Structure formats: structure tokens, C-alpha cells
Length: 326
Image (cartoon, one colour):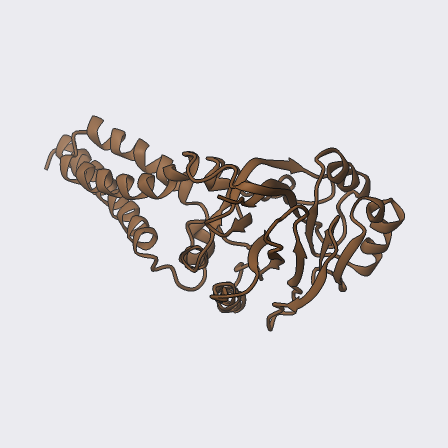
């Protein structure tokens, strides 16, 4: 066999292996088959894989490897269809009823800058603040810095290290318990009535924090606690889930939460591909794991993500509106 044929076969083999790899990834994402470590964290990078798959289709075409190119085209189509809708606005931006501003931030074990959080709450006119990884000392520092003047009502489940969570509000809150799971991360539930709501509806906000699926021991905990978020009562208060889900919309476990009766606010306004973690200091491509999930009848608008010094997560802010009268 001459050198030209040998090189041609080597190229064909390489392109075929690339096509098989992309096809396998597309099958995992399209069918929701990711299980265990490292497949679960790997699925978070689907938007990057989708872009690489499109480039691979072009490369296979230029190399005239038609069968691998066809496989790559199908894989790229599956991934692009999964990813692109997040960048296309849909849904209701204003439902006609009372509006309130929600902000969520993982404070990185209380390391986030207090003054920047206070400034965001004040300047963005935040009504409900959901914090994760909140220590008792951090709550005290927030209070001393003036948060209580802006958001005087609190449901406090702060704790040591990364275990605590809180909800702060400009509206009176009722402590509705916690969705804390076996990993020990608090997920406080706070209930309130939006000012000016003629129907006097109760809304619950959950400060969500699920364990990161970064090693085999945490993946099942992560899946179990996301599954617990699907338990939306058929009657009773409406619910908003805001926090660090440690999951992207490419994870089947988070899509199950959406299927239970939620919309991702960022995707509604076409910002679903804006990354929230990590902001800096980690050699990882940024992904979107912090979310505000609302019920479908709620309107969402003015979504914004903001970097906060001292945290490796971006704050997510969104205006939520309840339906108005007809």
C-alpha cells in the first residue's frame, strides 16, 4: 500500500472516530441518558460541543468524508436544536399584575463583597433576595451594612461554610420551611403577598442550592434533590425557584423540574446562554447553573447577570409579574 492510501485511510479513521464521539454525545443529550460521573458534569458543556460539532461538519466536508459528514450533520442538528432556543425570546414579558424584582446569588461561603450586594439591591430596586452559602456572620454583616433598611424581612437558614441559605424581602415574609436534603445545604422557603395584588395571592420563593455533581458520591444526591423540586402542589401558593442549581438546561434532571411546571426566566427573554459560573479563577469554560424558575403564568422581564467580587457566581436579577385582572 502506498503512502497516499495509508494517509487517506488514517484521515478517514480519524474523521469517523470524531463523528462517533459527537454522535454519542448528541444521543446522551437528546435522549437524556447522562448518568453518573463524569457524564453529568460533561453535559453542562453542551453549547460548546454544539459549536464544535458545526465546525466538524465543515471539516469533514472539506475532507470529502461524506458518510462521517452526514453523521456529524445529524449530531450537530440535535445539539443546535437543543441549545439555540435559549437565545430566542418567547413567553410573557409582563403579565399585567403586580411586579417585583428578584435577585439570587451564591456568596461563596460568605466571601462576596457586602457593599456590592447592598448596592445591587438598592440600585436595581430588588424586592426579594435569595442567597446561598450564607454564614451567620455574613447575615450579621449584611444587616450592619444596611440591608435591613432595604429588605427588612428575612427567612434565615444561614449555617457554617457553604451550608446556609436565606431569603430577604421588602415585603413581609412567612417562614414556610425548608427543602433541605440529606447533603445539608439549606433551601429556605419564604412566602409573601405582592403589594397591590387584588387577588391577595401568596407567592413562595425558594433559595435553591443543590450539591455540585463534581464527583461520583455527589451525583445521586444532586439528582435526588433536583427531583424534590418537581413537587409543585396542584393547589396553594405559586412558587419561584431561585438559586444555584448546579445544573444547566442540558441536564435531564433540570428539564424534569421545568416539565413539572416552570419556565427558566433567562430562556424566556432569550438570555439562556449567558453563563453564571465560574466568573474567574477557575480553568473551566463558563456555564449557566444559576437560574430563576417561574411558573408559566408569570411574566418575566429585565433579566440581568452581574459579577460580584468575592464570589465565583454571577448574580441573576429578573423582574417577575403576576397576572392582572381581565
